Length: 259
Image (cartoon, rainbow, N blue to C red; front, side, top):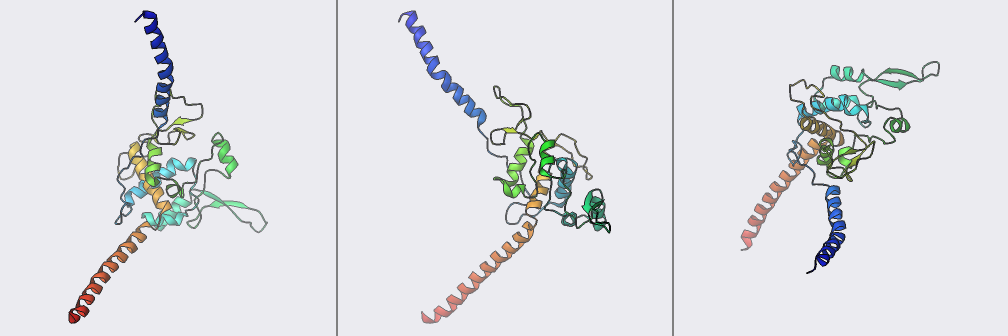
């Protein structure tokens, strides 16, 4: 075959396959991998919340996540379910200021939060939240686990999915690459960094550990009655099993006389 024919064939092949290869590469870069699935103490019909993990998770939320994300569906007295005493809850609530009133003069005023108050958010309104975050609105985390497909696995994936983008993937200013976020471009910067908090029980504050603990806490926030439902479900199943056995035994006794 003449050299010019070989060269022409090579150019034709490159013209046909080059865009295809680029498309395949782009598709691979855009693909979202399966969510991670760490062990959760609350999963399964016998699942319960790990109280130590709940308290560590609340600490991560309080010291890290609460700078941007509200938790408006919870009150401070709800923390009793995590094992905090009444005095501890009062001390936690008193760290925040809430608007109260009007007073005798018809004026609103600030006072320390009380256990019955809802968690104080980081911003007074949505506009202030957007202004502080480049136009993005940090979601309320009260129901985030219930609201997102994948539940705790999704939230854990977002917390731990900040990695170096693949070659050729462009990350615009004000966005960050996250492996598990749809489209991979997220407005939230990496929230967790090693040793960002110091746990009272001495647990090492690695990123996976902090993510696991805060997701456990947020799952409790979304499903505070999970343990009670599991207990009721187990009792109902046990009742049904015993009922089946009793009715089967009664059926055998009644029909034995007929045969």
